Image 1 (tube, rainbow, N blue to C red):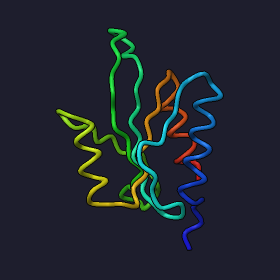
Image 2 (cartoon, rainbow, N blue to C red):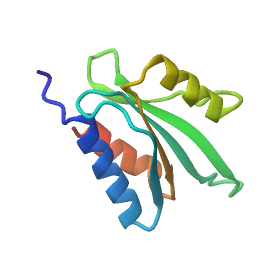
Image 3 (cartoon, helix red, strand yellow):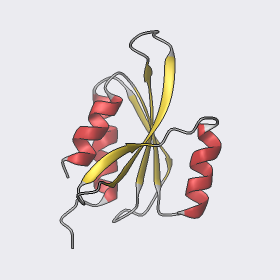
Length: 113
């Protein structure tokens, strides 16, 4: 046992934080409630241009063995990217978070646990 909270609990907490802050959070694909990976599509405004941008963040392990957020935004289609990932890993959670604090909430919720 590694002491991490179950993935389903982290997902619920993250969605609640996002929705309570006035943003929007959705589960696009439900993964394993205990140990499934978490892939988050973050939608926010670029601070320089104010254009909406989409980025993909994933919970992974860093070189020191600690949990880190890894940006894995594909160069082209995010939809087909996460669908391919999900086809290879049916335990993977796919979330979409839309709001100004989406990346911060993701880091605070996933990296603290």
